Length: 253
Length: 121
Image (tube, helix red, strand yellow):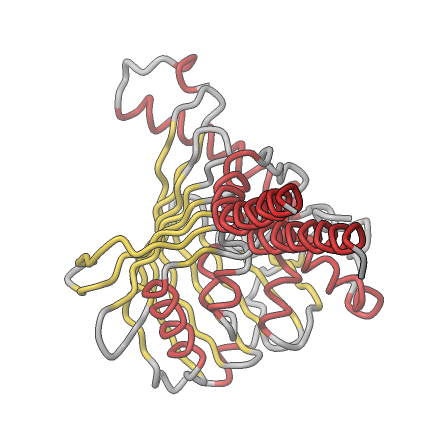
């Protein structure tokens, strides 16, 4: 090879190397940057939840409502949730603004307002994961609590994460926990996972930082029961006297 | 010969700089992604009680899920209930929000009689 050819070859090689590095850097930029300890704790929690065939738990929620003038009002609600993988879910929710009951039996999703007994009934996919996505995408019904109901909680929680960090140890209502913090494009969220043999989610705080007033949603999760002996009838909807079906319209066309 | 060596040194140096800069660029890009990207409006999505799940709070989730959904849309699309049904959840949701605001005003006024309505609206 002549000298000019060698020089040309060398230049081309270096340019290619530079482009490769830049491409790798760009590709990696879309990957979440999660601290290894945080990642491990999140995986342990996800595996622990996934190993359960059925379970029940209670939640206590506080959430901000930002009024037009910017004032924040804190509302609350409590819920009892029961689920059996892969296709059963039941929830009772009572709070300042809601008094509802929900059933999912692998075929339909039913949400009843217990105040006036109006209910909606929607045909949904046969697996809970898909049903949760379906209700979120079609009807905008996506409670933050639903994040821990998926079969692979780790994948769901990290899907849009930009960064994840270990904050430290903390006690949540008497339970020693690990405090983790994550950022995403639209939200920041924090998770407290029980320390020890039962790595359960004990508290979640979501900050909707791109919503006016940056409202927060806080949920405490308690009374976890992995042997609840749930009756089949719990997931069956039997309309009470006076119940009437109402229409539900998709929010995304 | 000397000229060729200095040219070679220049290119080797450039390669080293590029290689060293890659991790820096990587970190920089991670930071920029979270801070520079414009807010991704979810105005077209009505969250349940205004609060979305972690999974569904970012556009990327919606897009990926919508892509998955498009493959099964034909069989899983929900038939709308007959139009003669008088109520809709959307309407109910709007009504709830309005009632909530009214309740808020009423509560605030009840608790603190001096609260002026124009500060709540």
